[in-house]
Structure formats: C-alpha cells, structure tokens
Image (cartoon, rainbow, N blue to C red; front, top):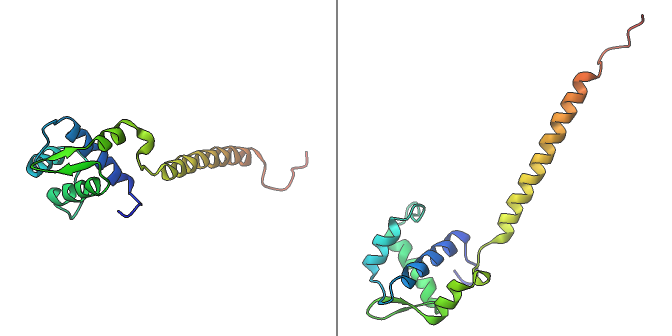
Amino acid sequence: MEGVVDSSIEIRRILLLTRLRAAPKGMTMQQLVKDCKSVPGWSVVGITPFDVVRVVLQSLIDDGLAAAKDRFRLTSKGLEYLKDPLKWRLEQVTIGDVEQKLFWDEIYETFDKAYRKLRSKIPTGPPKDN
C-alpha cells in the first residue's frame, strides 16, 4: 500500500469500514469474510476472499481506521474518514483521463462521419464537359 492506494482497494476499504460501522460490537474475521465475499466485485482473481479481507483490513489497521481487539472495530478516526469523502484516496485522475478520452473519441468520430459524408458528395473524377 505505502501511500499509493489502488482505487479498487480503496473501494474495498470503504466497504469494509461501512460493514464495521454497522456492527457496533465489531466483527470477527470469519464474519467479515462471509459478509464481504457476498458483495459482487469483491473477489480478486487468484486470491482467496480471506486474503483479500486480510490485506484490506491490515491497511485499515495501519492507517488507524480500524482496531483489532477481541473483534475488529471501527475507530473514531475511521468513522471520521468514512464520513468525509474528500479523504478517500480514489484515483480521480484516472477517471478524468477516461472521461477526456471518451470526449475526444466522440469528437473524432463525429468529424470522421462528417468528413466521409462530405467526401461522398465531392466528385472524384475529372470534370465533365457538357
């Protein structure tokens, strides 16, 4: 993780924090795995659901957003983090790049259509004498 968080991991972190917020007494690892693996898109190819939860949970503990006692619990810092989407580390640059690419692709497609239409109306041979 080390400062750079992939958006897919950040989404899983937010999901896990949300699950912990809903359980004031905390959750066991087995409960978290069972709860999270039922979420579409949670799984990662080649990694067991247990390991995905473990990696995400460890990142939350390292950042002080969750704590491990007899069960895993949301900390007050985690609650503040969850309430403030500006603190989330989602890669908005990537989203912006995708939107910009789609925008320019649409413009190029529009110009290509207009150009083909214009070319079809222009005679391509020598001028005809009447």
